[in-house]
Each structure stands twice: as structure tokens, then as C-alpha cells.
Length: 215
Image 1 (cartoon, helix red, strand yellow):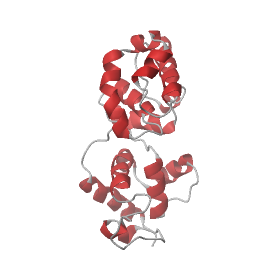
Image 2 (image 1 turned 90 degrees about the horizontal axis):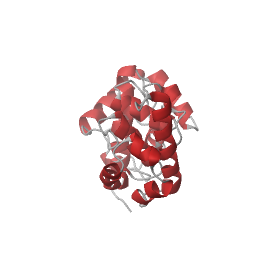
Image 3 (image 1 turned 180 degrees about the horizontal axis):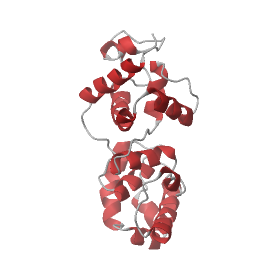
């Protein structure tokens, strides 16, 4: 079954009622949101949330990060994936923000993606969560769910993002990542729990798992 544009808005509203929490990487300030989202690449949000308070206590400012040895930054985040490359990116990011932006995180996609370790997903999270700008952050959950729903056949996050932008009004954009990440952890997992999914009638996925089992 192929959803209509009205159905697609309904889906976001249904998930929004089901998942009311803010996104895990919505840390309030642009600085914290940028750093946390960068750290979350290929890493569970829960792991980032465990290390982030200590990391920010050790390095509370861009200047402290810019001056730090990469090895010291790496030590603070050593329990998360790709910590060595992320430490190098964070130091470079801090240096660029100080040198080029006076210590303030820019609020434009084309500027954010010039920073080390920052791609469109991270930039979109910062724009959406910290600046309140309509943005679509496509992570693994969003990519999987959107393709299952039949909203996109895109084989890259960029294509899926473009398809979503064409399908949904801007007022829905910033909710997509927040609600689909929760939904992707809870119901639309690798082996989907379709028997308790509120979106079954909207979903185009052919291999629905309607038998109640996690095994």
C-alpha cells in the first residue's frame, strides 16, 4: 500500500503522540548538541550520554578543546566507537570555530558541513535541535523506516533526505528523526515487531512480521 501525502503527515503525527521525549542528542545549546551528535556516529546514544558529562567537565569550552592534546580528548571518550578519529575531529572543529566563527556555532548547513567529522546528518541535528530550523536528519533508523514505509527507494541517506523533503511539509521535518529513532529502537527494529505497530495500514513493507515473537 502506497501512502498519500496526507497519510505521511498522519504517520508523523501518530509517532509524535507515541514518542513525546526530546531527542537524546538534543543537548540544548548548539555547542553541546554539535559535540554530542558528532560523538554519536556509529555509537549508541546511551554510550554518548554516559561519557558526555565527564567529557564536558574536562573540556568546558572550545578553547580548552582547541588547546588539548588529541590523546587527552581521546582518553575522555575512549569507551565509544571510533574515539581516536573523533578526538582528532573535535580538536580540529574547536580550532575552526574559534578561528573562523569567533567561538560561535554557525547556523547554516553549508558552514556546518565544512567542520571535521560533521556530515549532513550531524548538521541537520544541530539545525533542528539547537536552532529550531526545519531539517531532516537521516540516520540508520530513518533510512530503514522510510524505505519500509515505501516513501523512498533511495540507496543513500542523501536521496532519502531529498525524497522526504519533497513528500512532507517543512513543519514535519524536524520531528522525523526524533520520532523515527525512538520507533526504530522500539518497534521497527531489524526484525520488525509489526504485530504491535501502529503504522501497519500505512506500511508498504512486504515482509511484515505479524507473529508475536522476538526470536
